[in-house]
Length: 419
Image (cartoon, rainbow, N blue to C red; front, side, top):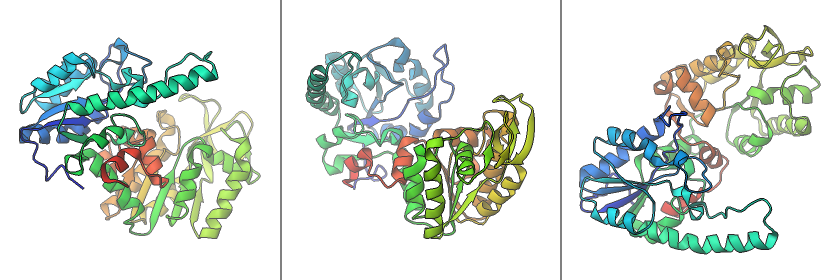
């Protein structure tokens, strides 16, 4: 497989799929440029070699062209970070865009308008809810056919294809997977970010130093079930926390007050407990919680057992007993995967548990453990505490990361390396 390090882009035009889906405020100012900065090493390598960069990305989930989701909003920041004036194409296809791409000189970059302004990017028709089955079927067929032309047009701008958008690697979209078919094996590759992401996940899941501990937060067992079951075949310790704590507590006969719960997943929770026993996995659940009398940072608080929560109260963070138990397991681990905070960390009054977990991960990392933090909330959490540089790797992927950990083959990865 071709690698970006060994490829010389001199005199070549490269189409780089990045993930510039960054948050904007009401004035269209970027509030977090992490994803743009993450792609800079790849883009700079291409320009430094004497290549030209044609940059493609999506922003938001538009239903068609709209100023709200225009990539024009991020153009100044992209230019600033790259250190060159990046040109802009008001469309991602069309004669004018084709001419701008053809006119690029070595060391120049062109940012295309939002790829998702076209339904062909995702390959899904945009229909009113009132559309009939016949209309829906016809529209699906039409957009799939036009998607081929759309993909072919994007590919025609460049000699080389570089995928540096791990955050969309689980989508078989035109620019994230299908476009790779138009380039031979020597002219398609991962960017630095994509390669680092893949390496990090494969190190955790395949090249594992033990003990291996996974920390899973989140509100619902149902959204993590495939992930949990796959991890039970891999890990030595599985810490389950966050909102799903209370589904497990209720399933074992506990009283959980007004805490979040999936009443239709109580049997599933008990099944996971039994499955962990069968596989010899140390399943670590919260035993105490920081309680609140409302879902608010200013709520009245107390501490108590996760199985003895009074009516009118709910658990919003782990308690001191659980902090110690989690930290003990984490500090003695050699491989750590953390996906999901253990409390409502967005509220300063309920972030102590997540901070304790973060500190334990950092301490283990200092002792030589490999730690991978992934999933949107986990990244926001580690960034809130200013500890991103103190762990081994912080992933930019949400759904892509989780699907890869689940053992799924991601289209964006398969398109480059064939598996």
